[in-house]
Amino acid sequence: MFLSQVKPLFEKLKNQEDAIAIINQQSDYSYAALGKRVAAITAYLVPFRGQTVLIHGHKQIDAVAAILASILSNCCFTFVDEANPASRVQKITLMTKATVILNTSDKALDDLEVNAQIMTAALPDGDPSVLSVPDTLTQPLFYILSTSGSTGEPKGVRISYDNFAAFNAWFADDITLNAAGSHVNHACLSFDMGILDLVPPLCRGKTVLMLDHKNNMLPRQNIKLMLRNAHKPITSWFSTPSFAELMLKDAQFNAQSFPSFTHFFIGGERVSPWLIQALQQRFPDMTIFHAYGPTETTCLTHCWVLPNPVVTHSGLLPLGHPRGLNNVLIVDDEGHPLPPGTTGEVRLYGPQVSQGYLPDDHPRNVTFGCDHHGRYYATGDKGYIDKSGSLFICGRDDGQIKLNGNRIEIAEIEMAACDHDNVMQCCLAVSEDRHSASTPHLFVQLADNSPARYDDFRRHLAQRLPANMIPRSIIFQQNFPMTLHAKIDKKALLQELENRQRV
Image (cartoon, rainbow, N blue to C red):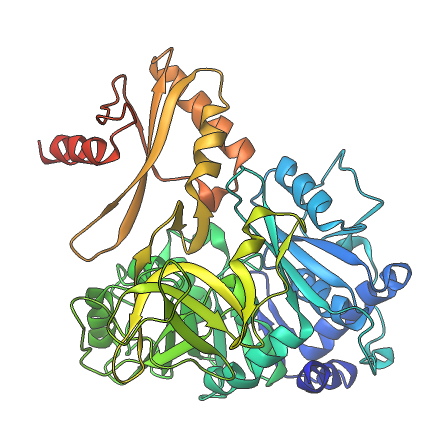
């Protein structure tokens, strides 16, 4: 099924159509231009067919071409954004057993342990007319996405072609309800939201407009790019709540500026009713989808149209019924199903459930299993299903948080911080504002607490963590309150911070 889904895209590349496929910060690229880059990288990958490739870059045309070339070469790909330090690239290379790095950025990766590496910009354009979709796929994996691990090491989520085909079978219809214009890709391609923003619309012939993360805090620059091609106005977008809230800070982000913008998908972290109300005020005729699904179940399992005006249930927004062939149960600590209205762990079933984690012996592989309902993933999310069958998510009950739309382990940030030789202790605590938006705060106690060491510590974090994992709020203080059990009292830390901010 996967090959039949992607075949129309490769036909457009092969036929060198003049229609616009990709819009990014650098230029507008036709299917013909994209096809030449796909052909170039596909030719390079001939010796690596069926192997795992690591793609390094951001939103370059070659980053897109490398993903498509991996499909034609039946290579499993893993994507590492160029914002990551080289040390993390090395860890992911080893974890995924990638045999070649396709570097689509202009940043050299030196001294990495890998068999082969190429700066794709050095490859001359290829001939798209020779591109051919294989009749069969000889290895099952489409991609491996790296997430944070509780040990401080990345773990890989394995998504097969069959997993993605089951997802794309229903989601491609949603994302092309307005097939004209362009779909906005905001998320990094190392994030499953980035993949769902790219492959489904391209397969349906819809232009993808790719926002550069250097403009994350500059909504006006994003607006300029979204208005650049009047023939390809934006008509759909999938965004995290955090980024949507940032865009709303610019008054030009409204229906008058974007009259064709009709479909907005939002998810990746908790969505506040306040944010939906603000979006509906700016875009009164827009359809807003509330989306949910862990990386481990291939992008999304739920995608529900919210009413206008939005209706909440004790401050929570509904996610509706599972989409496609997915199913959901709410279970107790023993794995027994719970009745409607009772909160428990969300367990997801169906053909989108991934092949598990890398490495194979990763302890969190116990979250995958089978019972008489089929293969499942135990999400760690807490939620309930109401009498109508709609899912509501109440939060998480473990050491994971959502930071900038990415689910990460608190332990990884804390371990990176404590690895600095001047750090005495640290902890990450998360506060919520009145709109239920979460903000992580990294509290750090330094042995030498001079201001000059603050910048040294920040540089240390930047060398060990990707930019999207570094909390914006870092608080240096000399005394940490403790609980009765002699552990750091995170609630007291947050209360002290709130008290200082009130002064």
